Length: 330
Image (cartoon, rainbow, N blue to C red; front, side, top):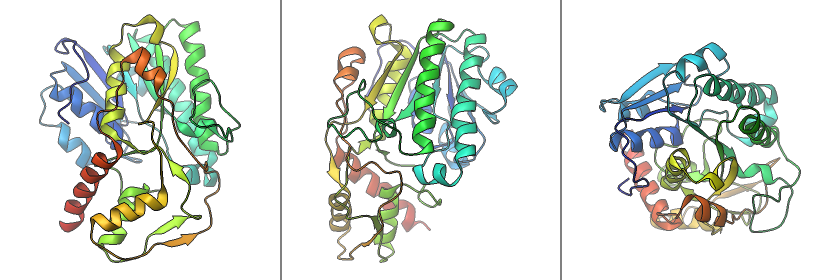
């Protein structure tokens, strides 16, 4: 990533990135390290993360790694000692996983969130940002999605992320810590897990087409998503941690492009790019999924100076090329 999202000097600043062996967390940590942050402490328990993502970070002088679980409050205290800013990305993602195992989703996404936030308060962290999700919009049908208008949650995962937002609001008021939440809309890009039981759709499509096998599409494929390249998620985290705009603090923000595309369009784009004619298999719609998704990003633009730097098709080509190279090595 070559775009720069800050003007501040990072050489005297320390950052904690939770879940940094994972997809989004590793990209945030890499940006900070590349731009000379004094310390970027990263934590993970490898429930979703990979050593290969940490290997990208290890060459940098400011890199520091602690292995542990955010469900352990003492570990969270140790992790946030001497830290200026926290970007909390650790979570158990996936709507289907949360429906299968709601207890684990709650323990990590809610219990772990409260632990890391409490530890940040105790260690006098200056500013705290965290990953929420567009899933909190639930059954609210209006498009585009506006932060102050949400519906009923459709999955335990959505409930856990909504609970995080409520806790963040209470902590900001009760403990006077600035907290900003980011509702991610279908973040994609290099380093997404292509092989797990809850793998993301883009690496799954690329893998299937490259292997000349038919990918699965849930439902009719006309459901739409505001697919958002990972560089844009990095941007909002950096801007959120470093903002001095009082108006911007203690709010939640949509993180997206502000454009939506159908899953069928996505599949056909990847298929055509890879010069394949293999057709997908359609199966039953997935329980708990939102039908259509499109974000209003004006709040992030106005208060944080957020401006998507990589649009959908540009990001998609970068991602296809990454996984194309990855699979050709196997």
